[in-house]
Length: 206
Image 1 (spheres, helix red, strand yellow):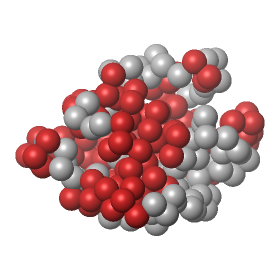
Image 2 (cartoon, helix red, strand yellow):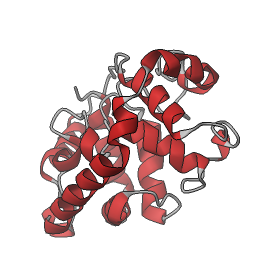
Image 3 (cartoon, one colour):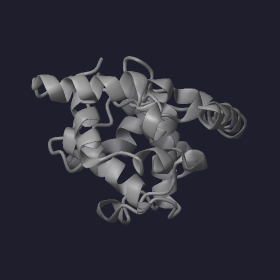
């Protein structure tokens, strides 16, 4: 938990220093134009038509902008995104991120299985300290909206399949653009059942 809090403080400071001007100048109208090429996979307003691609509507600006720039710069490898953002400037990334952030987030319907929901809520709100898994709510907030100043994403309404795949990628190290290895450390301690339970819980969280 101390490491988590320290990383939170560090990333909040880093984002504030490095991106404050770009974020302040972000133009949602310009972002809407630039985001037209995103619509096929993520939907015109950021609600994806398929679980292979994440919903972007309502996502924290800082998180979406970082992912665009990380993909562009090769820090995050997403084969489906190859070439899609190569010509994006940093400002383009923030403009697109602002556009999607202003859209209404997806509202999901969870699997009502009681044991699955109970385990998902337990992990999300309390974690599993015996295994070194902190509460997801510590970084993603109790309502799943994330913390923009720390680049912690909103999870609410996200596809179960996408959330599970993301956790698996962090656990294996295939995805490695998380600040201070936070998600890689956490996901590596989670079982497949843990991932499924949390993913189902956040689908309906709002």
